[in-house]
Structures are given as structure tokens and as C-alpha cells.
Length: 317
Image (cartoon, rainbow, N blue to C red):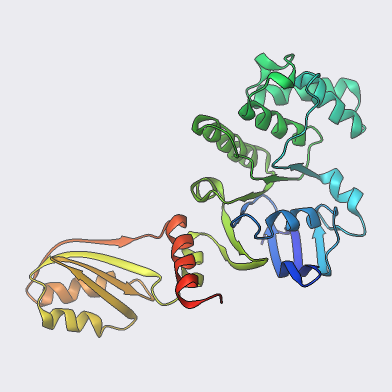
């Protein structure tokens, strides 16, 4: 089993009567891309700042790369690269000069820093703009330079807070591809905070749904569906004819089925387990013709929005 590089245990951050983070426990294995997904104000940035030792939790413990973030924040910062949502570069300096300045702050020798800076600028597709002042960089270029900036000290973890804000679609595609490549080729652990569903689904190994300071569910897409929609995790879409009432009754009475929706010759069968083989047998035995049977897979967008629809209908959990 892969060792955890980030361990958060029962962490709470309280401001007066308001909980920014409420009893958060989370373990992230080394080499994983983990997505913190949630609306603005959910507590994602507060969690990141506690990981970095920039603010202290009210209760609980946090360990990053084996170090206590509160007691040993310098040790954590040496091993973690952080890209905030608001980038700050010296606009009168070039991209190359900004990287050298960061390297100097991290006690990296000039010779090593120059080689590493050129290598990183090539990796983030900024070689041609290396000696251009960052005040003239586009938002997308600044984000790519920001990624090079957090990598200059060879971190074990990179934390990205809303890294694609304000970038055009092509720039987003390039940045996400770059993050995925770095993770695969160099084994860097990535913690990505975002409210962009599609982007998170594209590159993250696992996702944590974060709302009102609480981690409601975590896992890959299938695991999230099971946690958030325990009663109808699986949806089997069937096209058959004729769909007589006797057949419909048998399907409804089948083990694990929670709901059946009929629209003409199409059925949507909701169930706690995958029972597609059982449904196909029932249809064929009834004498009906089976034209198509597919399992519908929940995307992150549907999981997320169906969850919030449930909250609005039934109140907060």
C-alpha cells in the first residue's frame, strides 16, 4: 500500500461561531492527483493554508511529508510548492529572472538555478518568452510560469488553488496536460483545488466533495456515486418492445432495484448493484425484443448537481 504523503486528522478551523473547516480527515497517498471540489467559501483555501502551516487549526493534526505543519512549517514549505489563485510576480523582471529570484530564496546555487530555470521554462512552453518581462505575460502564461516557479525547488508536493481561473480553453487544456505529465513522469503528488467540475474529472485520480467546511465524500467517480447516492448508484438503460405491465412488475420486484422509469420503449432501472444481466434475462424470457441495454455512468457534473438538488429539496444533511 502506498504511503500517505498528506495526513489530516479531525481538523477544525473556527472563527467565532463560524466553522471554515469542520472535523476534516483526509489521507492522500504519494504520487496521487487529488481534487478538492467545492463552491467558493467551502473551506478549500483554508484547508490549503493549514497544510502549509500559514494558519493554525483550532483542533486536530496535519502532517505533510512526515512533518507537523504547525510545529515544523519551514520543513513543510521546503517540500511543498504552492500556486495560489492570485499570482504575484515582479512585473519589471523577466520570467527567467523571477525563477532565479525564487531559487535564491530557496538557497539554490546560481549555476543549478539557471539550468533548472531554462529546463522548466522549456517544460512549460515558455522558452521563447524567458527574457520577456512578466508584466507583458498573458494570464495563461503567468499560470505556466507559476507552475515552473513552484517546481524550481524540486518539491514533493504541488498545491494548486484554482489554477485555471481566467485562462482561455486552449490554455486550460495545455495547463491540465502539463500537470498530468509532471505527475506521471516525475511522481509529484498534486493537490488541486477547484470548482470546475470538468477539469477536476479530467486529471484527478480521486476527488473530495467539500461543502460548508465538511468533506462529504471522497473517492473516484464510482465511489463518489456510491457514497452520495446509495439508493441508486447503478442505472441501466434498456430499449425493448413490448414493455408489458407484467414485465415491468417483475423488474420492479427484482432485488436491489430502487426505481424504474418508463418512456415509450425505453426504461431506466435504478439499482444498488449492477443487475443488467438479470434485466436482460427477464426481458428475453417475457418474449419481448431487446434492442439495447447499457449501463449509465455518472459523471462528476451529475454527481455534484444531483447532490445539491437533494440538499435543496431535503435540507442540509
